[in-house]
Length: 198
Image 1 (tube, rainbow, N blue to C red):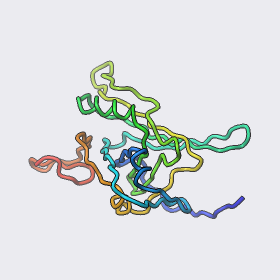
Image 2: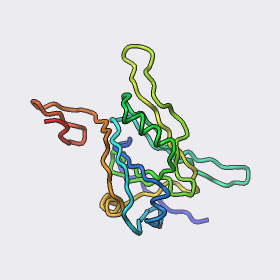
Image 3: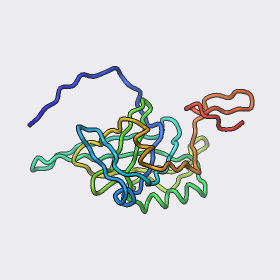
Image 4: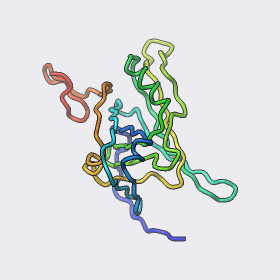
């Protein structure tokens, strides 16, 4: 058994800022993944990564650990959240996500970059619903998604966004769930400072 020392840094901000869905089969055909000491690097390029901008504080990533009777450890990487609203685009996205086998690149609010689903099983939709109207006034309309997989180790990190962008072609979404934090005159400003509407 090998152990590593660790010293915690300052408390960080949790939550998912945005994430990218990658077709596992396409990635395996074009890009090799290499993990050394918990850090992932990419060898190859040219695969699409579909960017999703979730609404603030609506998505989370966890990796529950379990041990079987023989002492074998496994992790279940799980990305869960809500797509707000009920549109034709969301109907299509919900359907397509249900068919796919994915890897997921996750950008945390504190800047941590996590790449989940590298094991053979990848990540797939394992729960949620295709859309719900709620019951009473004030309840949100939307659909919930759970993407889960199985892994022998926790998901590795990617050191820089530039490495990811060099390997993948980012496809920006039709759907952009943005949380408006400020209005300046006729301009609406999103949480990441992007101008949404002038």
